[in-house]
Image (cartoon, rainbow over all chains, first blue to last red; front, side):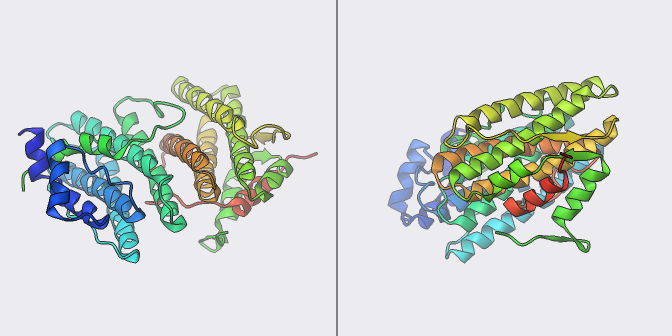
Length: 201
Length: 192
């Protein structure tokens, strides 16, 4: 499956949701994003679009833990963490969905996903990677949010994603914190990292 | 300013204070209280600096413990290095220079007690930073504080794991505003 194929078949439903939230939800507006692979550059326009983007990240995280647990190959502390984090990602989905509804927005389409969850160590490594990406995704958006309550919600979730990342990094022998001051990730970079796990509908 | 949160019949501030006092912590409070009273960005920066001073005192205490294992010691040294970087970043911001550093003292002489104290302190710091992000007015300060809060979240998770606690106790880290943090810091007031 090529990157373009993934773009056309996987997350675009979510992209359409994001573009619709920003008032650009026509087919003509969506096509260029598919063609160039720039996911969508309009993510930062408006609190609703930002929350929708982060909701996509949360969908992917929740799916990852669900698939990791269902695979039945992790146990002990790793399984305990997976269950706890899965529950918290679901709570994040609920929080962000509530924010969207409160502001008159709609949740984006939920992409289908597939994560490689065959082997315990690779599951943990992938989990750590995804958590680090999403922690960076939140940092990339917090300062762009205008509504104080929405910002407070994102900040409160952001540090939890960082906790998840650190716990999984420790599970795979990584450092508590890769750098003293965390780096924000742009939305396109985040989506580039997550796109490989979106599948054909 | 958020109302104190009830935890089993007490406020979170009192709960935290008791938890840390049980581990033998003492601290100075007046400097922190003054910083916490300021509502502008300079006050937010001072507030964050007090949090960093609290952490640096904690790590210094931990590194003096004879019974600290080599693995924990290595992590604490890393975290101390992070706090120094935070402090440098904060002192470079408007309002970050001047003022009398707050001083804190911690009791407790074994690794288990230290890790429990560290978990409580780091959770407090995460909440403090999250509240600070909400108070900050300039975009650059929001970005800096959020980036540090993220790292503090990682520290908190590590200390909680070390203390055999879940790394993330809640789906959302509650913001702990100036009055709540101030209550806790004042409860640790050092004599003199």
